[in-house]
Length: 593
Image (tube, rainbow, N blue to C red; front, side, top):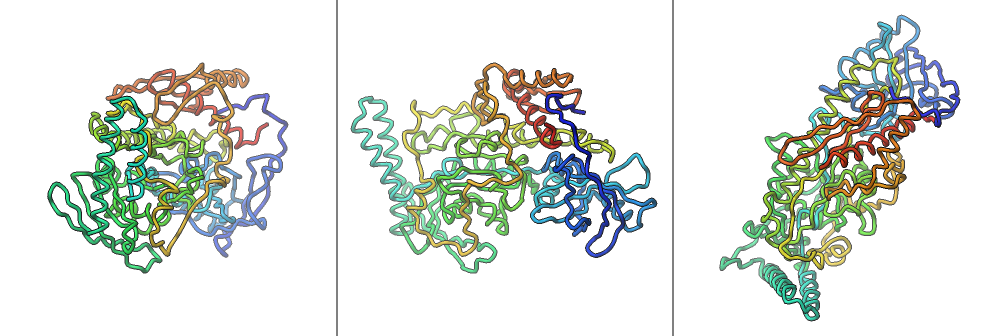
């Protein structure tokens, strides 16, 4: 059990306790004795009107006990303990306890936008119904129980320059003009040749788009290709039938579409990133969903929905019923945030990874969960994607596979095992470490080297406000979410330790890590000394295709952090940082100091 630092300890006030009547709906179940976990004002019992009124039972879990689910999505959220009285307990209360215990269900009390889950716990005292009460955001438990039982995580995709590059006639002309001006003042003949070739590629695709706008056909290698009328399946609540003219050019990895079928100037030339089919197939291989898929983009909403339809034409990754809430459009001047992506309670950020070509557009607390890919640059470096032994999106697929494997290995071998050992009489600090996607997000080296020697001088497609300005497509009549990321959910308002400790430049985004002397390790060892607790680092080496080091941190023989890196030092620093975050969670949960 973790012991707090004596420097943080304060004289605790007596825990709050009280006797309450329990109901399921209007049916009386029996009397219970309720004991707060936290002392003082923080230990106020959470039940309104001094009674416990259960609204429903949670969905049954196939293999995950409720406490394991709650510790994963709301770590150390135990608010109080309940014990039946008198003995023997009321038969209705005993039946509730047996049902919850045997069927892996919890009894749910709804208080505003919060759910209080009563978790049936085994006890040293036989035949006494005992519960732990844990709080969690409404709806999150029901969404998470299915994902954890199916060993499923969430994956969030950016669109522009991550999965596709798109251009209109105006954006093509703007980029051609900009490159032409740069050529006029460039003296280096190699760079001039590179810009000339880039302009030629832009012009070639611009001519195809112009032909599509004028005639609804394109001429490709002497073949005249006409449009296919593709019906856009309406989202729930949208009655309007929409049919778009579309031309697919698989040899070019390109698609031409029209955002508003009635306005030809909303026509778009879309280049799909190579190996998207490999990544998409992995996500739904053999009909088994490994990841719940979301989109978070700074693009205009109608455009984003059409681009996603082109990427997922059969709606295998996101069903039509979920499309409205899972394609999230963020204002161009805002930061992206997983809390807003999962605003409807579909997943906890700890269970989600992100695929994006930019890290800094994400809130700092989400950045450890972002796998950064090189920006897709089909005009600047058209051969770069396929010239590598492993295409960029295949690397992303491998990273996702490793993240999922590491997360559920920790979940099964550590968290589940220890939760099964817990009794009603255990303390809050006896809860095990809960896995976080950020613990396992270590990038494979893509060796991505564009054919040109300089970085792309200009963005290759439209993004953000540019799309909104250049496309005047007909708006969907359904959900028009434009989310500003300026607010914070109460679930994740603490400033992470990353923001308060200096001396380390750890970049968890897939780039090479530059680590200065390990401040995290030093701080952790000092905490151990003050707490009279032993701090151990245990390391292993993975002999897979790419060598990786894994380091676990043990604090008084309890695992409190894990780090994975390309070197042992890198893995140790990441493990120490995770351990400090976990210690901070323990301290925050028990309100010590």
